[in-house]
Image 1 (cartoon, helix red, strand yellow):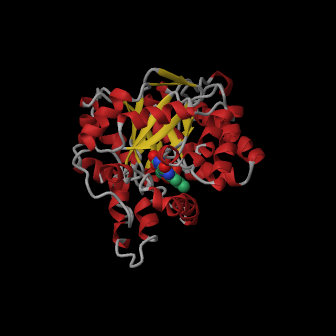
Image 2: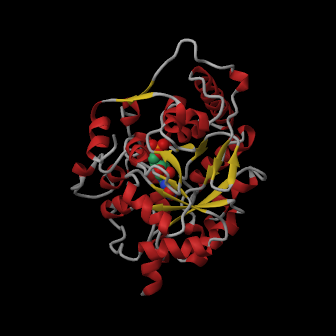
Length: 359
Ligand code: FNR
């Protein structure tokens, strides 16, 4: 019926109550399958900041704070939406929440609609706020859920903002995935209107084109995470969950975060965030140079989380210190000054940007 159709939408949001076991299993599978992917070369390698030997500024003078929509974040990177819904993923969220609190890093939950459909799983999400009572927390929900559900996720987490994920490239390959996409624009509009907090629309690794950025701005969205290709690849993850694995050719489908930032309209109304294949603090800085307000990191912080609390705190501290050091090296005292840094765009990324009309 209609209720089942609704609850079957979104990133691993799917499934009616009778499928709850497999739905929980999927959350654990996503973690395992994401971790099994090799961390590869990607378009960030084609973004080469120009070094000026006398251009560095004092490390201590660098201000890492950044403006994202109506918010000021203490650092220009964040723990992107990943998980929750099972005991194991609840432990990951708890470790990440504590590290986020200790280092002052904004953090998103994984898609939390499972917690609406099966309240027994709620604690694996609420640990994110419990572990980090005053930090910046984002909820996460898939497009296609109701505005009321979006609001319930925000309330469950005490979230400051809501990530709303667009993931058609995943749903298509997901064995139990969504097949109806024509209602998605109306859904974005409804969720923006009813969430009760600012909504950050994100992709999950296929990119948000210039054209889609414009549509989102017209729908009332102010912050977009371009979530590009080159990192965790959900077409590969879902393909390996299919018996026949017929979609293997779709690996790498979509646009990289670097390309999405390059092709963004000059004077766009949106604040852009970059994610997808952010492997190092240098990739964060490359994103900032290309105009992102901050960069989202999923896989690399997942690796820290599975090593435990101490490693996660140390790891996030190290990223913060390295981003500060790299900005000083480039002579950027602020995150917005990084946009003035000179950069070479090489290889295929340059060609793709040119074909998309970027000069
Ligand atoms: C994700 N991602 C994700 N995104 C989202 O909006 N809702 C979700 O529930 C999930 N779930 C999820 C689980 C796992 C295990 C991973 C690794 C990732 C996608 C994530 O936010 C990000 O867009 C991509 O992972 C690309 O970033 P990385 O991994 O290359 O840094």
